[in-house]
Length: 511
Ligand code: KIV
Ligand code: ZN
Image 1 (cartoon, rainbow, N blue to C red):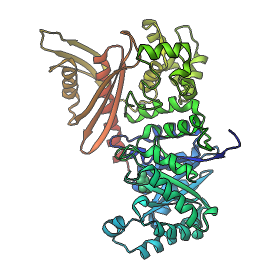
Image 2 (cartoon, protein in one colour):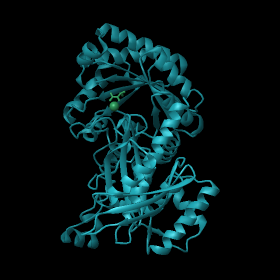
Image 3 (spheres, rainbow, N blue to C red):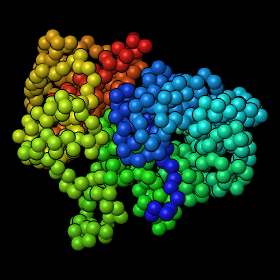
Image 4 (tube, rainbow, N blue to C red):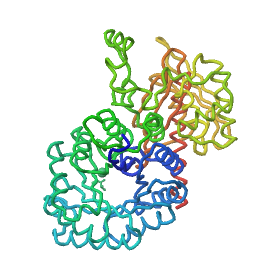
């Protein structure tokens, strides 16, 4: 394995991934995720688009300044001085910064979006890369919409930008239009027709509009690409990007046919996927490859029998290789603080002593009422206690009345900036009633866009996990809540979303 050539994994969960509608993350969440990505072993983290907003700038700077270690931190910039300067200002104190600048090369983008001729595009690309290279030797150039561009023109641009100082050349399938054999042929063509390609790394960045992002990326690697841009859980603009976990496990599982390796420590894949889902509020579909809840579940009796006799009858990967521990019952009510801290760190969280104490107390309380404790139970406590943002609204008590012949009613007592208030409301169901009572007390004008409830683990004593997405004046936030009582979990998730809205509004005001 070690003698295989290594490809670079460029993770763009924090940039393209964040372009998934509703997947925005705050500065602490982005840093937590960056630290987990570094632990996972990605080579480059694209931390954001610094010129886009002060918030984006601060997030990139925070990661570049504080992450440390060997991982490269990239910032995106269009091909202009203002963008490149903003990217560099955010990155320059980091250990290993990369400026990633991009310009479209397809006829359709040049004519309608940029309103520039191919000659002007070539000139601007060269000028911008030269300027970026005067700031750092680590410069990536992306030819946006490359898969729909004239290939000879892309070769011309890539040849010129290498001469201007680019060290990575990215060939995106921006619209997710390519098919694997076609995409591989394009990569092979670039490898043959860019005379100075030996001075740069050829990269691909695929979108999933036709469900082919992973297949296209893999085909590109087999044709000579040596960097793949991807996101955890396949998050990203529209249908998303290449799912990192799928690409990495395909390379590993089919190492008989794929002659490269990655630097990913696959045992951190599952905790990273959970972290991304929890932070962004984007649930992972149960049948999602590698990290979906059903990815290693065998429903049919014939399959179960086969797996019990010999795991490899129906399993091509070992669940432990992606960090799914068997049964996953890790801690019980007799576990100590030290074991708890170890487990929490393996899940991507680092706690202060005070945070650990709070989590420990909650853990013990839950372990008293619940027979078995799973990672997901612990995660729910962490979301409540650690990932929390300042609490303008806090739930004190909730009581509901519901059933087949009663009008659902909820009574909510909560604290708003320290002051206790209460209200009751009727609703279509008990959750609707609870949300109406909360809306009355908070006076919120937000709209509920999405609501989902899941059982965190199996069994009737499992905690219910609720995720909501809420919108107010164009701001979209997610909220999560977990509790053995699903109506309480729903109320907590709604309040979490409202607290996030307040946090966003305050952050915007202070800019
Ligand atoms: O999809 C795309 O083309 C991009 C570029 C900025 C790399 O995200
Ligand atoms: Zn993209």
